[in-house]
Image (cartoon, rainbow over all chains, first blue to last red; front, side, top):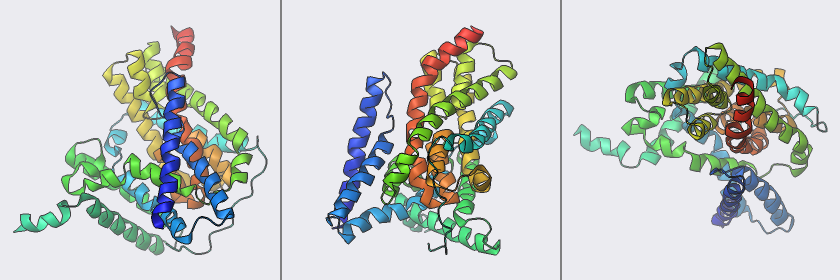
Length: 130
Length: 253
């Protein structure tokens, strides 16, 4: 059943969010620290386990894959509701701070990646299949 | 008569949003093809979305771009944090645990380095523009971390609403810059493998920026980048008003 996939994913998210707020609470702030990230880790582990045991049906997987496929459209919708006007009207200080912070991030990708074992580049995408 | 027919687009706002985004994606695909496929269709769709947000923001005068225009209110739901986070979690399905393990140490390092570096850059910019009060320097510095960390820090430290607004603006500029520039800088920055995506997520931090930046670059990298990015704002909210403020206070107090 399709809903089983959604329930698995939703369950991971509910538990992850609870853990995220718990971490925040323990650190003394009212915020969700990494709840979505923990949900993702749980989904990676549990979906792998269920698939290894052949207990995640194709229909259940398609429930998750649907949302995966909706990711880019959702991101586009997210973009349409950004406060772009505020960014444009922000003035030089906000521009410099925001741009310089982004630039430094790009410069740091290589040196910090080098701290870990090498990860192979993904193979090129054959054809745009969307 | 027009008003009666208008119910078609206003009755089910979320459904209208599906139609609007579908049209945007289609046009982006056509534009991408017309440009010889050099720019990814998702990158074009994202820029189009941001342009629509600008137009909508100017028209409605709200904070949520096109979603504040009545007709398009469904975009607020479709692009809101519930759908966004649910879709982000779904991308983890199929991510490789081995790749995530490889990126463990660099991913954590990237989070801490980036909170510190962003805050230093934001604080330095504030200093350069004549802000000398430690609370104001810290708040604007925190804004360069993300647009959520800025106001959280500012409120915790009692900054003025003008400075808080400035910190939000710095964070929004960062987030939008990440969305737009990532597809063009990815290759040069070495962002072509899962481990680098984890580091990128930790360095850029803004969940929306990373979500859109990777979507426009290579959607297969999304789970790796999003995973680390989701820790960033929380870490910033934790460190900026505490350690960050103490450091600023020691230097400029």
